[in-house]
Length: 294
Image 1 (cartoon, rainbow, N blue to C red):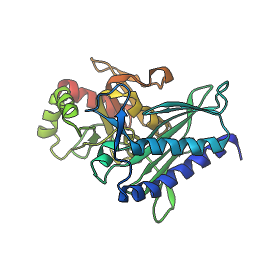
Image 2: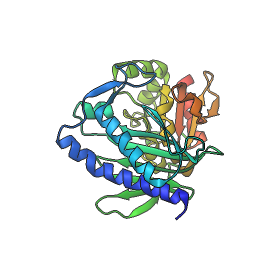
Image 3: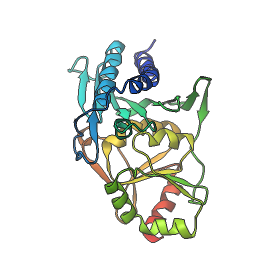
Image 4: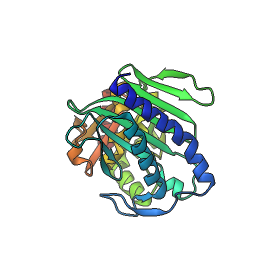
């Protein structure tokens, strides 16, 4: 077994364990207590809870079994696993995406999302995710993205949407689950919202997002994920799904120029003023047009 295969095997087992363990822990009311705030964010925006720490510690346990030297960049901490003098792989992850829901007892959108990067070239080589409540596993590599549904358990390849323009059938995701996000997003998107109402009344906004957005984009459930002032820790864990599926991720300038988003380990605590992740470049450009001009 290759070094990468051994590592991804450990990660796959980690995701499968969380799929079983988190519902069990929830039934015991475990892990809803707040530990502290997330680096670069206020407590009103996001917090770290006990389940976050549990999930990250469990991830470290599985990674140590791989024997690889890893730099781990999670939403909450940076950890070095193995020999600090060399690095085989970099991992970006959100060990538990959905903390705000979990701490409030909302049984929805509990995810774990992980991307593995080859350290020398800083290129994705694998990604995995688990949608805990729906019991769905996603795996991404150079061959594409596979979805495994449970209890059936038969994996099959999935693809992003082929739509190139916004239409009545489009679904755009945006995290709008707190007052400050709603206010900021709707202020920036007033022309777009007007267009939705008048031109595309059957179009829908999916109001949850973050790291969990990228498996759904790769699967073609949503056409785009758009945010303003988006933390990089909500982007970087899902980039392996963009790489494997062809989904495009852009930092957008104020005048609408698309710039390919690039993972930078030195900037993990930063934010992107305007982010669009879309099924293709054409759809991203059409979305920009509606944001700027309506």
